[in-house]
Amino acid sequence: MSTPRILEVRKGLLKKNDEIAAGLRAMFIAAGTFAVNLVSSPGTGKTLVLERTLAALRERGHRPAALVGDLETDNDAVRLARSGAPVRQINTHGICHLEADMIGRHLDKWELDEFDFLFIENVGNLVCTSSYDLGEELRVALLSVTEGEDKPLKYPTLFNTADVAVITKADLAAACEFDRATAERNIHAVRPGLPIFAVSAKTGDGMAEWLDFLIGRRAERFAGVKEGAA
Amino acid sequence: MHELSLANRLVQVAEEAAREVGAARVTVVTLRVGDLSGVSVDALRFAYDVATAGTLLAGSRLELRPVAVRIYCPRCEREAELPSMQQFRCPTCGAPTSDVRAGRELEIESLEVE
Image (cartoon, rainbow over all chains, first blue to last red; front, side):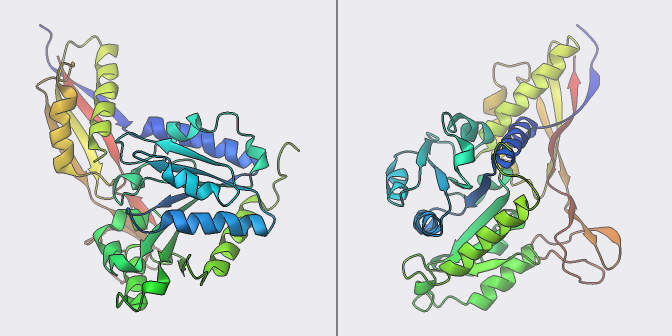
């Protein structure tokens, strides 16, 4: 029997995921595809916001596509496909979040340079999704008015790792006695300076500002970069 | 509950490192866990026992080293430990800051092997 000894390892458990994500990120950028990761709890209305976002981007002459993660069923992919955008479902079969290699496997036979946006709708989960980089340029944390203003304080990691927050179901704010100022203060407590939008995908309120932001961020990211196979 | 996938990943990384040096088993795993890593320590401990069964890590002890969140204050021009995850501001001057310098770690620091 050998003597006990200490091995210095210093290896991150997410290193493999981070490496795959870095590869995806480079691929998206080379193709001119702006990848957006949507994270929230279940029932925030991610799918409806995304459906309307895809349709509106297409109306403005953009070419968005979407990957949608769910534990089971392809209901969300069917809903999103109504926007006319190419959509693929990722079933995680019990895994509570998307990982970078699942994204890689579902891009097969898609010509990325045909898309200027790729939306990735993560599994509804406020904890696990924040640990996994999917190669996105923009991580969007969604919060519905029905969830209450203090969600950001309860799940600081998710909001802290986001690049933008979207308050959804704004049309229900009055009925829920949702205090937008408090919600924004709480979001900014855990992530100072985070841009915040409030939308109602149902009535369309706030959607124009949200779309302008997305289009602006994409333009900023690719400013000076020649798109596609130049 | 992504702790089971993390625990499985931990076993892979630790077994690889142990085999590299020809160790027969791992007795202690020291893991650095940042407060902003999104990991539930209780769930991880539970998952650890499940994931290590039948591996070189079977029966080993998991030692967790929590890593506090450290921010950089642009006003004071220095790093500071964050006293509360609900307030990302400099504990000295109160300036809000999103510049996180530590606290996202999730890494195996060391292994005790024999």
